[in-house]
Amino acid sequence: MYKEKMHEMSIALNVLDIASEQCRRADCAEIESIHVKIGKASGVFCDALLFAFDAAKQDSIAKNASLHIEEVPVTGLCSDCDKDFAVEEQYILSCPLCKGTSFTITGGRELDIIDIEAV
Ligand SMILES: [Zn+2]
Image 1 (cartoon, rainbow, N blue to C red):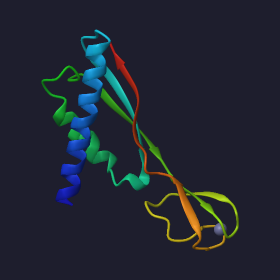
Image 2 (image 1 turned 120 degrees about the vertical axis):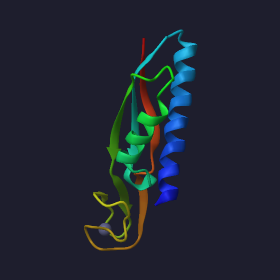
Image 3 (image 1 turned 135 degrees about the vertical axis):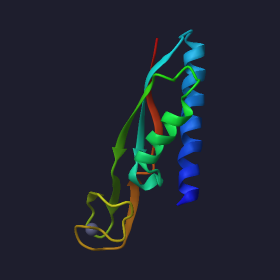
Image 4 (image 1 turned 60 degrees about the horizontal axis):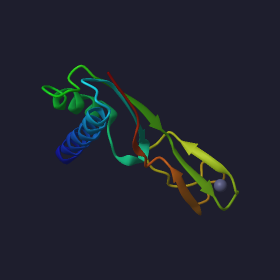
């Protein structure tokens, strides 16, 4: 669990780095908000990331910025029943439709910055 917390802090710092760089390039003075997309299978805890972001943004050009997280469910394509499915859990053990185990994970590992608003 301690390792996970450090994981979120390094992601928060990384997001801040990228946002700050874009802000500077666009000649903006301050970052207002950052929108990220995080897959449920990415291993990132949203609460921990928000907490880490709030700590990391102090004394940066993003000190007043808010972080918006869009959670993406884990999705798969089953080759037993040939259907797409999405699950609420972090992992897929079997197809929720036919209980088959021949499936491909198609989504849920995202960790993308989708929008940065700066002024
Ligand atoms: Zn299936």
